[in-house]
Image (cartoon, rainbow, N blue to C red):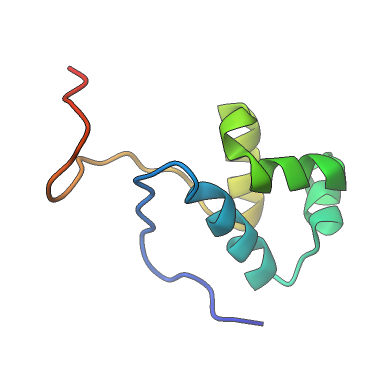
Length: 87
């Protein structure tokens, strides 16, 4: 089993969240089916969450993260950004 993340993870682009979720699950030594059984979701749904997290509700995303022992924090971006200000 690989070492768990011990720091804050910055997700700045589409496509980063799925691989991070997969790594967090594998770091726990859990299969998709095991994670799903802990939170009442099927293995197929966990697969979709990991492969297409943009299609998942924030509620399901938070449930998965909580089961893995993580949470979402929102912070100002650091460094140069390509996105316009939202406010």
